[in-house]
Amino acid sequence: MKIVVCIKQVPATNDAKIDPETKRIVRKGIKAILNPFDTYAVEEGVQLRDKFGGEVIALSMGPPKAEESLREAVSVGVDRAILLSDRAFGGSDTWATSYALAKAIEKIGDVDLVICGKQAIDGDTAQVGPGIAAHLDWLQATYVMAVKEISSSSIRVKRMHEDGYDICEMSFPTVITVVKDINTPRVPSLKGRLASKKCEIPVWKPNDIGADTSKIGLDGSPTRVIKTQPPPPRHTSTKKIEGSSIECAQSLLRELRLRSIV
Amino acid sequence: MIYHIQNKIYHVEFLPPKQDSEKLEKDLEIFSNKYLRVMDSGYCACITDNAMGLLSFQGTEMIEELDLPVIPEQVMIHLNTFHTKDDLDNILDICKSKGIRHLLIITGDGSERLPKLQPSDVGATDVESVTSVELLKYINREYPDTFVLGVAFNPYEPEEHEFEKMERKMKAGATFIITQPLIERNEVVDRLLKKYPEIPVIVDAWMSRKLHLLSEAVGYEIPENTEFDPISTLKILHKLYPEYGIYLSLLGFKTQYDLIKDIWV
Image 1: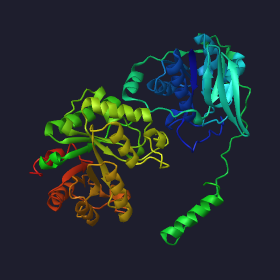
Image 2: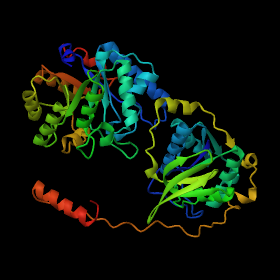
Image 3: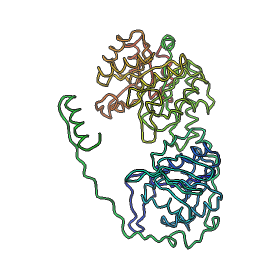
Image 4: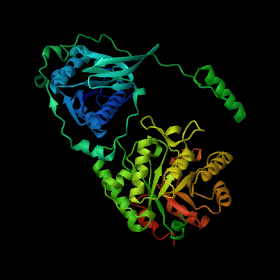
């Protein structure tokens, strides 16, 4: 089985600043990390490869620095990694990004399964996974919380939604986006980390993947960000519980129950 | 562990490099140098396990990858409950194959990225979460007569609760105790020594000049500019606790290491 895991490098902050002109996140000077939801996608790819054989490839689009996240994926077991990086890709929205990733997946060839995290923590759109499926005209299942069964021609997954669960069976090739219930991502081993530093990561440009340049970057992006503003601040308050330890524990339990936390 | 105390073997703690280290090769070299220095001194290298919940490499993989020598009486691995079952078994198997016998079993500090052992992983049916007690039982059951297992004692926690926990740890098979850092005589530790006279106890000596970093452990604010002389304090602890071992945390390898060799004689 050939698996491609699409990953994204995102700013490691909960306090993102927005450029007032471009309306995009200011990434300069902010530490970048592998999108946390993508760590579950990587882990699932590695687990499926270990169980069913084949190859798992990490794919990302971004600036040269995004190579770091690909190396992180290699450090936890993916076989190889590919970076799409070029100025022409800059400014791509989710539609243009998923187009470019789909073209890269076509170039990789003979891919059975594409796995994405359910969404990236910077944009929170959850559109790229489904976008890839749309561009490739493949089946897709979003919010997958378990892979139940895999045969030579199909995959059966459990996906979660607001009212419960679906069990979906799809023939290959297919795209799934995964939620964090699906597995526990492993922590890189020292051996893996050292190997990841040595591995070569090819950088593909639009020509390498046969991309139509009118469909990538700002020109290929139908989305226009008109205005971006931070969400209203959350109103929090602190309540001091006083009394004996037993009284405090009882009060705390009552408060937690009132908030349906326990 | 009695051997360590009788032979005046210091326990020297140091941390493996962090997972997100941007100068990994350099950090590996530093770790290797510290480890070999401790081996040469005849002391015991105590390697932490994701201390303070910060993702770091495991002591076992450091020893394996860097091909560091293991002298059984001179290596102690910390092991906490923030692992997958596979990782736990892997660590224990490496310890066994490498001849690492001394393990300090602690509940540990978690983080978002660290998995947590589940009760079913260690065959515990009567608890909701895994603590050092369940981990001790698991290791003793699955690896009988393989390891010398120690536990931590925190004199700054509510006293009776800490002693109850210690009793459970002892019943689960702990055979030595390491305290939280001390800087003076501690009555709660004195009570511990009286309660478990047969158990080897290692007293943790705080070796950083930055005493305020101990604030969280002791539960009260120590002003940042508090003057503290770790070497003098170490000498005092030897006098106060002459029959017990000493664990050196945050020891400065550049400035302090050469000063300690003539203290415990």
